[in-house]
Picture 1 (cartoon, helix red, strand yellow):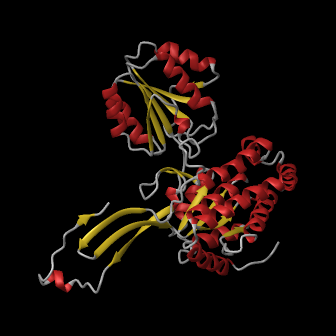
Picture 2: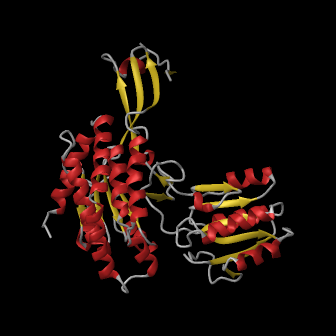
Picture 3: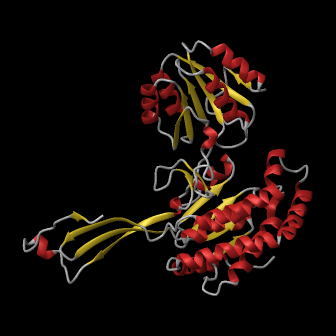
Length: 414
Protein backbone atom coordinates (compact mmCIF):
# COMPACT_ATOMS: atom_id res chain seq x y z
CA UNK A 1 0.00 0.00 0.00
CA UNK A 2 1.28 3.48 -0.88
CA UNK A 3 2.61 5.40 2.12
CA UNK A 4 1.37 8.91 2.73
CA UNK A 5 1.51 11.69 5.30
CA UNK A 6 -2.01 12.41 6.50
CA UNK A 7 -1.35 16.04 7.41
CA UNK A 8 0.05 16.74 3.93
CA UNK A 9 -2.89 14.88 2.41
CA UNK A 10 -5.37 17.01 4.40
CA UNK A 11 -3.48 20.19 3.54
CA UNK A 12 -3.62 19.30 -0.17
CA UNK A 13 -7.36 18.63 0.10
CA UNK A 14 -7.84 22.07 1.66
CA UNK A 15 -5.96 23.73 -1.19
CA UNK A 16 -7.95 21.72 -3.73
CA UNK A 17 -11.22 22.82 -2.10
CA UNK A 18 -10.32 26.47 -2.75
CA UNK A 19 -9.82 25.77 -6.45
CA UNK A 20 -12.95 23.65 -6.62
CA UNK A 21 -15.03 26.48 -5.14
CA UNK A 22 -14.44 28.57 -8.28
CA UNK A 23 -15.19 25.79 -10.77
CA UNK A 24 -18.05 26.32 -13.22
CA UNK A 25 -21.16 24.14 -13.30
CA UNK A 26 -20.18 23.06 -16.81
CA UNK A 27 -16.85 21.59 -15.71
CA UNK A 28 -18.36 19.88 -12.66
CA UNK A 29 -21.08 18.29 -14.80
CA UNK A 30 -18.49 17.23 -17.35
CA UNK A 31 -16.58 15.52 -14.54
CA UNK A 32 -19.71 13.74 -13.28
CA UNK A 33 -20.53 12.35 -16.72
CA UNK A 34 -16.94 11.14 -17.12
CA UNK A 35 -17.16 9.37 -13.75
CA UNK A 36 -20.47 7.67 -14.62
CA UNK A 37 -19.20 6.52 -18.02
CA UNK A 38 -15.88 5.25 -16.69
CA UNK A 39 -17.52 3.30 -13.87
CA UNK A 40 -19.89 1.70 -16.39
CA UNK A 41 -16.98 0.66 -18.62
CA UNK A 42 -15.09 -0.86 -15.68
CA UNK A 43 -17.88 -2.79 -13.97
CA UNK A 44 -16.11 -6.14 -14.34
CA UNK A 45 -13.04 -4.82 -12.53
CA UNK A 46 -15.21 -3.60 -9.64
CA UNK A 47 -17.09 -6.92 -9.42
CA UNK A 48 -13.79 -8.82 -9.33
CA UNK A 49 -12.50 -6.64 -6.48
CA UNK A 50 -15.81 -7.05 -4.66
CA UNK A 51 -15.58 -10.82 -5.07
CA UNK A 52 -12.23 -10.77 -3.25
CA UNK A 53 -13.73 -8.79 -0.37
CA UNK A 54 -16.73 -11.12 -0.13
CA UNK A 55 -14.51 -14.22 -0.06
CA UNK A 56 -12.37 -12.73 2.71
CA UNK A 57 -15.39 -11.55 4.71
CA UNK A 58 -17.56 -14.68 4.47
CA UNK A 59 -18.38 -16.04 7.90
CA UNK A 60 -16.48 -13.23 9.63
CA UNK A 61 -19.08 -10.44 9.53
CA UNK A 62 -22.84 -10.36 10.25
CA UNK A 63 -25.09 -11.33 7.33
CA UNK A 64 -26.63 -7.85 7.18
CA UNK A 65 -23.17 -6.31 6.78
CA UNK A 66 -22.24 -8.96 4.20
CA UNK A 67 -25.36 -8.06 2.18
CA UNK A 68 -24.44 -4.36 2.24
CA UNK A 69 -20.91 -5.23 1.12
CA UNK A 70 -22.06 -7.23 -1.88
CA UNK A 71 -22.28 -5.40 -5.22
CA UNK A 72 -24.45 -6.79 -8.00
CA UNK A 73 -25.76 -5.51 -11.32
CA UNK A 74 -28.73 -3.81 -9.67
CA UNK A 75 -26.59 -1.97 -7.12
CA UNK A 76 -24.11 -1.00 -9.82
CA UNK A 77 -26.91 0.32 -12.02
CA UNK A 78 -28.28 2.35 -9.15
CA UNK A 79 -24.79 3.59 -8.31
CA UNK A 80 -24.23 4.91 -11.82
CA UNK A 81 -27.77 6.29 -12.11
CA UNK A 82 -27.24 8.11 -8.83
CA UNK A 83 -24.34 10.02 -10.39
CA UNK A 84 -26.48 10.89 -13.43
CA UNK A 85 -29.25 12.10 -11.10
CA UNK A 86 -26.80 14.44 -9.37
CA UNK A 87 -25.55 15.65 -12.76
CA UNK A 88 -29.13 16.63 -13.61
CA UNK A 89 -29.71 18.56 -10.38
CA UNK A 90 -29.26 22.32 -10.15
CA UNK A 91 -25.85 23.53 -8.99
CA UNK A 92 -26.24 24.42 -5.29
CA UNK A 93 -23.26 26.80 -5.27
CA UNK A 94 -23.55 30.54 -5.92
CA UNK A 95 -27.27 30.78 -5.22
CA UNK A 96 -28.35 34.21 -3.99
CA UNK A 97 -30.28 33.62 -0.77
CA UNK A 98 -30.74 37.27 0.19
CA UNK A 99 -29.90 40.63 -1.37
CA UNK A 100 -30.42 43.83 0.57
CA UNK A 101 -29.57 47.48 0.04
CA UNK A 102 -28.11 48.82 3.30
CA UNK A 103 -27.90 52.26 1.68
CA UNK A 104 -27.66 53.61 -1.85
CA UNK A 105 -24.79 51.75 -3.52
CA UNK A 106 -24.10 49.57 -0.46
CA UNK A 107 -25.40 46.08 -1.31
CA UNK A 108 -25.35 43.04 1.00
CA UNK A 109 -25.69 39.59 -0.60
CA UNK A 110 -26.04 36.21 1.11
CA UNK A 111 -24.78 33.52 -1.25
CA UNK A 112 -24.42 29.73 -0.98
CA UNK A 113 -20.88 28.34 -0.96
CA UNK A 114 -19.14 25.00 -0.25
CA UNK A 115 -18.30 23.83 3.27
CA UNK A 116 -14.71 23.03 2.26
CA UNK A 117 -13.19 19.64 3.16
CA UNK A 118 -15.36 16.72 4.29
CA UNK A 119 -14.04 13.72 6.20
CA UNK A 120 -16.20 10.66 5.55
CA UNK A 121 -15.90 7.51 7.68
CA UNK A 122 -18.11 4.64 6.56
CA UNK A 123 -18.56 0.90 7.00
CA UNK A 124 -19.18 -1.96 4.58
CA UNK A 125 -21.02 -0.19 1.74
CA UNK A 126 -18.62 0.47 -1.18
CA UNK A 127 -21.34 2.26 -3.18
CA UNK A 128 -20.95 5.10 -0.67
CA UNK A 129 -17.76 6.15 -2.48
CA UNK A 130 -19.52 6.99 -5.73
CA UNK A 131 -22.43 8.70 -3.93
CA UNK A 132 -20.17 10.88 -1.79
CA UNK A 133 -17.79 11.64 -4.66
CA UNK A 134 -20.61 12.76 -6.95
CA UNK A 135 -22.22 14.91 -4.26
CA UNK A 136 -18.84 16.43 -3.38
CA UNK A 137 -18.03 17.29 -7.00
CA UNK A 138 -21.40 18.96 -7.59
CA UNK A 139 -21.28 20.85 -4.27
CA UNK A 140 -17.62 21.88 -4.77
CA UNK A 141 -16.31 20.16 -1.64
CA UNK A 142 -13.08 18.18 -1.32
CA UNK A 143 -13.41 14.80 0.44
CA UNK A 144 -11.21 12.41 2.39
CA UNK A 145 -12.84 8.96 2.56
CA UNK A 146 -12.10 6.16 5.02
CA UNK A 147 -13.99 2.94 4.34
CA UNK A 148 -14.16 -0.28 6.33
CA UNK A 149 -11.42 -2.90 6.06
CA UNK A 150 -13.97 -5.47 4.85
CA UNK A 151 -14.43 -3.52 1.58
CA UNK A 152 -10.88 -2.33 0.96
CA UNK A 153 -10.42 -3.98 -2.46
CA UNK A 154 -13.76 -2.72 -3.79
CA UNK A 155 -13.15 0.75 -2.39
CA UNK A 156 -9.71 0.97 -3.99
CA UNK A 157 -11.00 -0.17 -7.37
CA UNK A 158 -13.91 2.30 -7.39
CA UNK A 159 -11.75 5.22 -6.28
CA UNK A 160 -9.03 4.46 -8.84
CA UNK A 161 -11.63 4.38 -11.60
CA UNK A 162 -13.16 7.68 -10.42
CA UNK A 163 -9.71 9.28 -10.22
CA UNK A 164 -8.86 8.16 -13.76
CA UNK A 165 -12.10 9.74 -15.00
CA UNK A 166 -11.37 13.04 -13.24
CA UNK A 167 -7.79 13.14 -14.54
CA UNK A 168 -9.24 13.23 -18.08
CA UNK A 169 -10.86 16.60 -17.29
CA UNK A 170 -8.02 19.06 -17.69
CA UNK A 171 -9.67 21.88 -15.70
CA UNK A 172 -10.56 19.68 -12.73
CA UNK A 173 -8.22 20.20 -9.71
CA UNK A 174 -6.12 17.37 -8.27
CA UNK A 175 -6.54 16.10 -4.68
CA UNK A 176 -10.28 16.77 -4.56
CA UNK A 177 -11.01 13.13 -3.70
CA UNK A 178 -8.68 11.17 -1.43
CA UNK A 179 -8.94 7.74 0.14
CA UNK A 180 -7.23 6.51 3.31
CA UNK A 181 -7.22 3.03 4.82
CA UNK A 182 -6.02 2.53 8.39
CA UNK A 183 -7.28 2.94 11.96
CA UNK A 184 -4.52 5.48 12.50
CA UNK A 185 -6.00 7.50 9.62
CA UNK A 186 -9.27 7.80 11.52
CA UNK A 187 -7.42 9.16 14.55
CA UNK A 188 -5.50 11.60 12.32
CA UNK A 189 -8.67 12.69 10.53
CA UNK A 190 -10.41 13.53 13.78
CA UNK A 191 -7.47 15.71 14.84
CA UNK A 192 -7.21 17.82 11.67
CA UNK A 193 -9.59 20.64 12.58
CA UNK A 194 -7.24 23.04 10.78
CA UNK A 195 -7.90 21.41 7.41
CA UNK A 196 -11.13 19.38 7.71
CA UNK A 197 -14.38 21.32 8.09
CA UNK A 198 -16.96 18.59 8.67
CA UNK A 199 -16.88 14.89 9.64
CA UNK A 200 -19.66 12.59 8.41
CA UNK A 201 -19.71 9.08 9.93
CA UNK A 202 -21.85 6.48 8.18
CA UNK A 203 -22.16 3.34 10.24
CA UNK A 204 -23.39 1.88 13.49
CA UNK A 205 -24.03 3.56 16.81
CA UNK A 206 -20.57 2.76 18.19
CA UNK A 207 -18.80 4.38 15.22
CA UNK A 208 -20.84 7.57 15.40
CA UNK A 209 -20.43 7.87 19.16
CA UNK A 210 -16.68 7.31 18.89
CA UNK A 211 -16.36 10.05 16.27
CA UNK A 212 -18.45 12.54 18.24
CA UNK A 213 -16.43 11.93 21.41
CA UNK A 214 -13.01 12.22 19.77
CA UNK A 215 -12.99 15.34 17.60
CA UNK A 216 -13.33 19.11 17.75
CA UNK A 217 -14.54 19.12 14.15
CA UNK A 218 -18.33 19.49 13.65
CA UNK A 219 -19.96 16.08 13.11
CA UNK A 220 -23.00 15.53 10.90
CA UNK A 221 -24.87 12.31 11.55
CA UNK A 222 -27.08 10.29 13.83
CA UNK A 223 -26.07 7.81 16.48
CA UNK A 224 -29.14 5.59 16.13
CA UNK A 225 -32.60 5.42 14.60
CA UNK A 226 -35.29 5.08 17.24
CA UNK A 227 -38.32 5.90 15.06
CA UNK A 228 -41.94 5.91 16.28
CA UNK A 229 -45.42 5.56 14.82
CA UNK A 230 -48.46 6.73 16.80
CA UNK A 231 -51.87 5.28 15.87
CA UNK A 232 -54.50 7.62 17.32
CA UNK A 233 -58.15 6.81 18.05
CA UNK A 234 -59.41 8.03 14.64
CA UNK A 235 -56.87 6.09 12.56
CA UNK A 236 -58.01 4.10 9.53
CA UNK A 237 -57.20 0.42 10.18
CA UNK A 238 -56.11 -0.39 6.63
CA UNK A 239 -53.81 2.63 6.50
CA UNK A 240 -52.37 1.70 9.88
CA UNK A 241 -51.70 -1.90 8.82
CA UNK A 242 -50.03 -0.90 5.54
CA UNK A 243 -47.89 1.84 7.08
CA UNK A 244 -46.68 -0.02 10.18
CA UNK A 245 -45.90 -3.24 8.28
CA UNK A 246 -44.00 -1.31 5.62
CA UNK A 247 -42.10 0.74 8.23
CA UNK A 248 -41.03 -2.42 10.10
CA UNK A 249 -40.55 -5.09 7.42
CA UNK A 250 -39.61 -3.38 4.16
CA UNK A 251 -35.96 -3.15 5.32
CA UNK A 252 -35.72 -3.96 9.05
CA UNK A 253 -32.06 -2.96 9.48
CA UNK A 254 -32.47 0.54 8.02
CA UNK A 255 -32.11 3.53 10.34
CA UNK A 256 -35.57 4.84 9.34
CA UNK A 257 -37.36 1.62 10.31
CA UNK A 258 -40.00 2.01 13.04
CA UNK A 259 -38.88 0.62 16.42
CA UNK A 260 -41.77 1.69 18.69
CA UNK A 261 -45.51 1.61 18.00
CA UNK A 262 -47.78 3.74 20.21
CA UNK A 263 -51.51 3.02 20.08
CA UNK A 264 -54.28 5.18 21.58
CA UNK A 265 -56.32 3.21 24.16
CA UNK A 266 -59.56 4.18 22.36
CA UNK A 267 -58.48 2.88 18.92
CA UNK A 268 -61.24 0.31 18.43
CA UNK A 269 -59.38 -1.85 15.90
CA UNK A 270 -56.35 -2.29 18.17
CA UNK A 271 -56.57 -6.10 18.29
CA UNK A 272 -57.02 -6.39 14.52
CA UNK A 273 -53.95 -4.20 13.95
CA UNK A 274 -51.81 -6.24 16.34
CA UNK A 275 -52.96 -9.52 14.77
CA UNK A 276 -52.03 -8.25 11.29
CA UNK A 277 -48.56 -7.34 12.58
CA UNK A 278 -48.07 -10.84 13.99
CA UNK A 279 -49.21 -12.32 10.67
CA UNK A 280 -46.44 -10.23 9.03
CA UNK A 281 -43.96 -12.07 11.30
CA UNK A 282 -43.37 -9.06 13.52
CA UNK A 283 -42.51 -9.91 17.12
CA UNK A 284 -44.32 -7.55 19.48
CA UNK A 285 -42.64 -6.42 22.72
CA UNK A 286 -45.16 -4.98 25.21
CA UNK A 287 -42.61 -4.72 28.03
CA UNK A 288 -39.24 -4.02 26.41
CA UNK A 289 -36.10 -3.76 28.53
CA UNK A 290 -35.81 -0.18 27.31
CA UNK A 291 -37.80 2.20 25.09
CA UNK A 292 -34.51 3.18 23.46
CA UNK A 293 -33.76 -0.06 21.59
CA UNK A 294 -32.91 -0.13 17.88
CA UNK A 295 -33.78 -3.74 17.01
CA UNK A 296 -32.78 -3.66 13.32
CA UNK A 297 -35.00 -6.72 13.01
CA UNK A 298 -38.69 -7.64 12.76
CA UNK A 299 -39.23 -6.77 16.42
CA UNK A 300 -41.41 -3.89 17.55
CA UNK A 301 -41.91 -2.29 20.95
CA UNK A 302 -45.60 -1.55 21.61
CA UNK A 303 -47.15 0.82 24.14
CA UNK A 304 -50.79 1.76 24.75
CA UNK A 305 -51.18 5.48 25.55
CA UNK A 306 -54.14 7.43 26.87
CA UNK A 307 -53.80 10.61 24.83
CA UNK A 308 -52.06 12.47 22.00
CA UNK A 309 -50.13 14.44 24.63
CA UNK A 310 -48.80 11.24 26.20
CA UNK A 311 -47.69 9.97 22.78
CA UNK A 312 -45.89 13.23 22.03
CA UNK A 313 -44.25 13.24 25.46
CA UNK A 314 -43.06 9.63 25.02
CA UNK A 315 -41.63 10.26 21.56
CA UNK A 316 -39.80 13.44 22.53
CA UNK A 317 -38.35 11.59 25.54
CA UNK A 318 -37.15 8.40 23.81
CA UNK A 319 -36.74 9.27 20.13
CA UNK A 320 -33.29 9.64 18.60
CA UNK A 321 -34.64 12.61 16.65
CA UNK A 322 -34.75 10.73 13.34
CA UNK A 323 -38.31 10.20 11.98
CA UNK A 324 -41.76 9.82 13.53
CA UNK A 325 -45.25 9.38 12.07
CA UNK A 326 -48.86 9.77 13.20
CA UNK A 327 -51.69 7.74 11.68
CA UNK A 328 -54.91 9.68 12.11
CA UNK A 329 -57.98 10.97 10.28
CA UNK A 330 -58.14 13.97 12.63
CA UNK A 331 -56.39 16.87 10.87
CA UNK A 332 -56.13 18.91 14.06
CA UNK A 333 -54.37 16.05 15.86
CA UNK A 334 -52.08 15.66 12.87
CA UNK A 335 -51.10 19.35 12.94
CA UNK A 336 -50.45 19.25 16.68
CA UNK A 337 -48.23 16.18 16.23
CA UNK A 338 -46.33 17.70 13.28
CA UNK A 339 -45.64 20.85 15.28
CA UNK A 340 -44.86 19.32 18.68
CA UNK A 341 -42.54 16.45 17.71
CA UNK A 342 -38.89 17.48 17.79
CA UNK A 343 -37.40 15.21 15.11
CA UNK A 344 -35.75 15.69 11.73
CA UNK A 345 -38.72 14.08 9.95
CA UNK A 346 -42.34 14.16 11.14
CA UNK A 347 -45.00 12.49 8.98
CA UNK A 348 -48.78 12.14 8.76
CA UNK A 349 -50.24 8.88 7.40
CA UNK A 350 -46.95 7.79 5.81
CA UNK A 351 -44.25 5.21 6.50
CA UNK A 352 -41.05 6.31 8.25
CA UNK A 353 -39.14 4.55 5.46
CA UNK A 354 -39.63 7.64 3.26
CA UNK A 355 -36.82 9.36 5.22
CA UNK A 356 -34.21 8.98 2.48
CA UNK A 357 -32.32 11.38 0.24
CA UNK A 358 -33.19 9.54 -2.98
CA UNK A 359 -36.90 9.45 -2.06
CA UNK A 360 -36.78 13.15 -1.22
CA UNK A 361 -35.41 13.88 -4.71
CA UNK A 362 -31.95 14.89 -3.45
CA UNK A 363 -30.29 12.54 -5.96
CA UNK A 364 -28.37 10.85 -3.17
CA UNK A 365 -27.42 11.56 0.40
CA UNK A 366 -24.27 11.62 2.48
CA UNK A 367 -26.30 10.48 5.46
CA UNK A 368 -29.12 11.38 7.83
CA UNK A 369 -28.57 14.21 10.27
CA UNK A 370 -30.40 14.56 13.58
CA UNK A 371 -28.35 17.67 14.39
CA UNK A 372 -29.90 21.09 14.84
CA UNK A 373 -27.34 22.84 12.72
CA UNK A 374 -27.35 23.89 9.07
CA UNK A 375 -28.51 20.46 7.83
CA UNK A 376 -31.18 18.11 9.21
CA UNK A 377 -32.75 14.91 7.92
CA UNK A 378 -31.46 13.32 4.68
CA UNK A 379 -28.46 15.41 3.62
CA UNK A 380 -28.00 15.89 -0.11
CA UNK A 381 -26.45 18.67 -2.17
CA UNK A 382 -28.01 21.54 -0.26
CA UNK A 383 -26.83 20.10 3.05
CA UNK A 384 -23.24 20.20 1.79
CA UNK A 385 -23.36 23.95 1.35
CA UNK A 386 -23.08 26.84 3.74
CA UNK A 387 -23.28 30.54 2.93
CA UNK A 388 -21.26 33.71 3.04
CA UNK A 389 -22.14 37.40 3.06
CA UNK A 390 -20.62 39.72 0.47
CA UNK A 391 -20.85 43.50 0.68
CA UNK A 392 -20.39 45.78 -2.34
CA UNK A 393 -19.69 49.40 -1.52
CA UNK A 394 -17.99 52.52 -2.82
CA UNK A 395 -15.70 53.85 -0.11
CA UNK A 396 -18.38 53.42 2.57
CA UNK A 397 -17.39 53.67 6.25
CA UNK A 398 -19.26 52.93 9.50
CA UNK A 399 -18.35 56.33 11.03
CA UNK A 400 -20.77 58.07 8.62
CA UNK A 401 -23.67 56.10 10.14
CA UNK A 402 -22.52 56.28 13.76
CA UNK A 403 -22.01 60.06 13.54
CA UNK A 404 -25.32 60.66 11.74
CA UNK A 405 -24.10 61.79 8.31
CA UNK A 406 -25.87 58.83 6.66
CA UNK A 407 -28.76 56.51 7.48
CA UNK A 408 -29.37 52.87 6.54
CA UNK A 409 -32.35 52.19 4.30
CA UNK A 410 -32.37 48.35 4.66
CA UNK A 411 -34.36 47.66 1.49
CA UNK A 412 -34.67 44.05 0.27
CA UNK A 413 -33.88 43.71 -3.45
CA UNK A 414 -35.12 40.14 -3.87
